Amino acid sequence: MTIKTNKKVSGKMEYYIIAGEASGDLHGSNLMKSLKQKDPNAEFRFWGGI
Image (cartoon, rainbow, N blue to C red):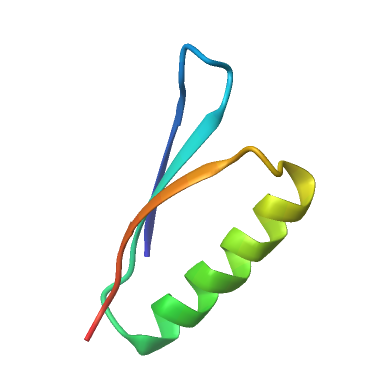
């Protein structure tokens, strides 16, 4: 799994998550849930596995 972050001009945090298989998809979704609890304004872009 690869994660990249970017803080937008608006102050919102953007996360880019790439997962290559089902277990990475699961870890990525759990990560997104945790980040949303800490930062409800966080935005995500993601590419999942097959």
